Length: 117
Image (cartoon, rainbow, N blue to C red; front, side):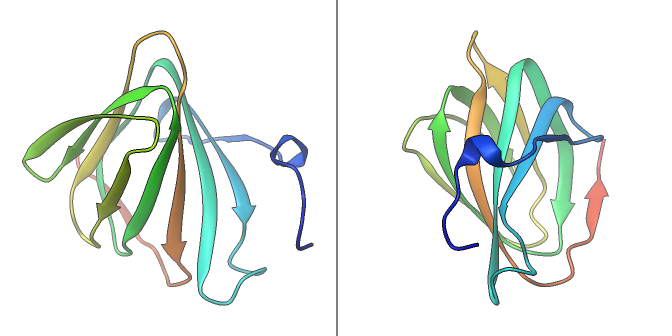
């Protein structure tokens, strides 16, 4: 389906995360090159340090977060853009009382995730 509403797409829990859900907005079955996902991390939530075998392109839609990329830690908020190269360790934590929400596009390749914590 070429057009749909975010509110019509199911949110599912990300088991490795705490208070974290995902919506697959465009799946690898729907698009030939990239999948698009919406990640929602509730206040007090996080995703542990991990690495993927595919790169990530992300834009923050709302809230604030602390993102570890390799040895650096960044505080990000709405309209910030992140690039996470394949294999780079990274983590996410919500800052404040609002959900930290971002879009994440990844190439349609096999993605192996390794939790590092």
